[in-house]
Image (tube, helix red, strand yellow):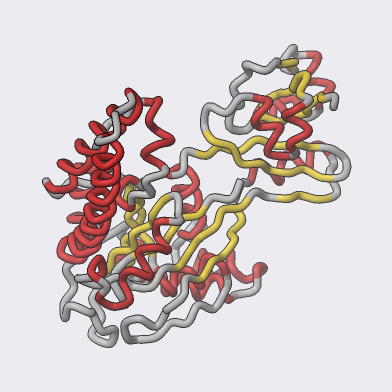
Length: 366
């Protein structure tokens, strides 16, 4: 399952620094706008200590974590929807992602130029949101005109309902509200997804602060972002991009000591990755055996045959049943034999809804 999270924000808010830390890649970073022209894509492993425990108890030779893709998209500026600052190119890159991490500058540093001349997270967030909504408005108006032209030759019932929904989204955007605030009928979810609207994507605000403010879990700038996010039913994470990049550059064996000296329990990136994972409505199930223990990604609500299909299409096509137990049962009872003795080992059919943390073995016949 290839899912992408786009990292967006104004120039010089710490996006590329954050991306560097996430992927241990070297996205070009400099103290001036537009230093990142093409989107950098990095595949990041999802931290999950449960996988390590499963592998240890099963006696697997190898552990293979699941992954998520992050895309570092060059800084947007006011007028991006009209092509300012290579805006159209950058906006097209965002359209291809499944969710957005909006990095907001919440630190004061005279040595780092701000594109607007001062630090004001509310203004910065409004600039980004306005540009995304304007781009969506332009896109939805074109779609609306296309539907109206089709209607002249006779409107089918499904086209009529689609037009009504598009008109509703159009009115919402004109009011300055993102498309995600519209309640979409279940049978039109696919249609709306195919519109590729920027403001329909789920958002996580990443407040980039200095090291001192990180230990205090924020500052006055962060509180403003939290208030705004709460009103939108969005989440906020506080992170120090500069510190995370320093941690990522250290040898793995030295990171624990560095974190302890900085007064931290774990890298902020772990929290960011997991929050982005949840933002996409994802869960993890495991397969485990002597050769390997592996984590797999599926959407919340996925049925057993579709979960099997993530491994191989033949598993889904010839699905017979899933033999499964929860990883917490393994942690408690230590062996699969003990799990069976306790009656926790189940044989599930095609209607079984996969749970986060399930350990699964699929039986199939093709």
